[in-house]
Structures are given as C-alpha cells and as structure tokens.
Image (cartoon, rainbow, N blue to C red; front, side, top):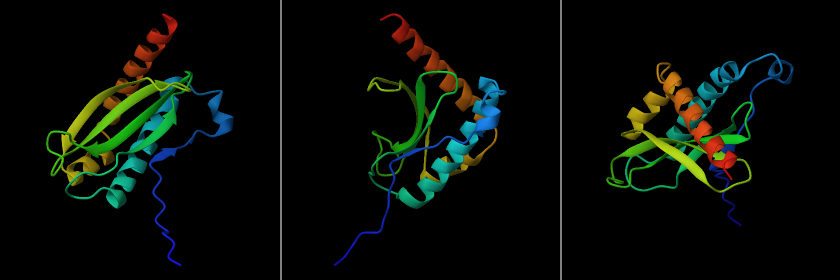
Length: 145
C-alpha cells in the first residue's frame, strides 16, 4: 500500500510570544516578534513547496494580531497575469470567525526574488504598517455594523 507522506500544511498558524511576556509587551513589540517569524516560516515553506514555473496552490502563514480580534495572513501565490513565471506576496486581515478578508498586494517577482525579499530585515516595517492599516480597516467595518 502506498501512503503519501508529503504533509503540506497550507495554513500554518502559530503563536510565538511567550505567555509570561504577553502582558508586559505592547502591540508593536509583539508585532516585532510575530512578523519576522511569520515571514521566515513562509520563506522556508516557499522554498520547499512552490515550483519555479506554473500555477500552484497558494500557501500562507497566519497569526493572531495582538490586542485585536483579527488574524493576519501572509500569502505566497502565483501571479494571475503571468502565472507561468511570476509569483506574488500579499497580506490579508480578517476578523476571527468571519470569511470577509481585506488584503493588499505587496510585491511580485520570481520565486527566488520573493524568498530573498521575505528574508530581508528592511521590509518588516512595511509588513507591520500594512497589517496595522488592514486591521484598522477591518475594525472600522465591524464597528459600523
């Protein structure tokens, strides 16, 4: 009997802030821990799971946004215009328990360009700012209901 041992986890969620520190850290400090871990996890998964060319199933890493009811998703997917050669990274935010997502396209390039981008330190502020902006938008939407 053949059993497929390939365990692809298309939704990888994690919580990596130690319990003892959660209470004494502010939201920005928590994001400084979560975003680099999420982007490195996504880069490692992309190296293993994303083909150089062609379409593939989107992969993403999700984490709860501190001090909110929202969850952030950083995704790696093929580009709709040029799926043969190009890939893209997007950030989305949704309210936990809902299926409405607000997202923003970040960058497009080849698989290797995007993996290198995910591993850089400089973009972390851009990711944090985008997550906060999208989270505020989700909060505004649900506060008006």
